[in-house]
Image (cartoon, rainbow, N blue to C red; front, side, top):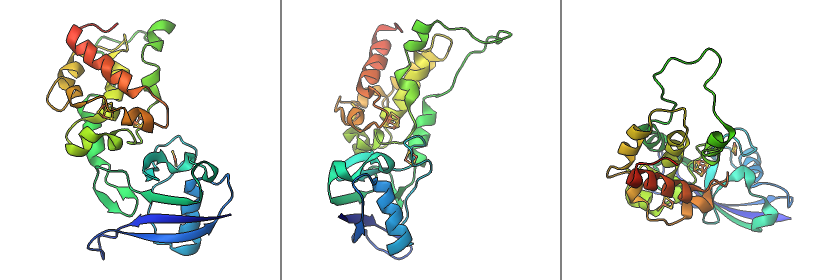
Amino acid sequence: MQVTLEIFRFDPEKDTKPHFDRFVVDAEPEDRVLDLLEKVKSYHDGTLAFRRSCAHGVCGSDAMRINGANRLACKVLVKDIGTRIKVEPILGLPVERDLIVDMEPFFENYRSVLPYFINEEPAPEKERLQSPEARARFDDTTKCILCAACTTSCPSFWSDGSYYGPAAIVNAHRFIFDDRDQGAAQRLEILNQQMGVWRCRTAFNCTEACPREIHITQAIAEVKNAIITGRLD
Ligand code: SF4
Ligand code: F3S
Ligand code: FES
């Protein structure tokens, strides 16, 4: 079969504005969009720029807009989306070149919520024990691979990029509900500020976009509830 790809192009060194290039490539139904981009780069235009690493849905580096929806290019099969495929960079972050965006604003928001374990008490000799039930409390939000598909599909983030965004809140949730951690109050205070959870208007785009099927909107609701009630159950 043949697939027609419309790919967003922008080279800041020579373009004044973006445009789309069209490529027709041979494909198998089981090919992934990432395979097609590799074909374009290898056989049609070696200047095409995109990020990828693992090619197996683990590293989170190839989030892009595929036929209007944020997806990992390595997880979308041709047989599932048809033979006309439009590929664009994720929205809301500055385009550096073609499908590559500047991820620094995304990671700056992520760092703002203290996404790491905080406990000043001396560690036990072996490990900090936790019950299976307590571990299960935040299991869903441990699955994040920081691909940015959620945050860059969020209308609130599009309208103001200083909103921390769903990915940052997911990673705050992972520690807020960990009963070994002692930084919950600090994180909840940060997320109660102007650019925190109250910017979420429950649009659900983030949940639909997440390649790890994390219940993001629910995690945000749980953080909102913890702020209101002061309880972490
Ligand atoms: Fe990606 Fe999901 Fe993590 Fe958002 S929550 S960054 S969509 S893995
Ligand atoms: Fe945005 Fe997700 Fe809330 S898309 S508005 S963070 S539910
Ligand atoms: Fe690693 Fe797609 S290339 S997630």
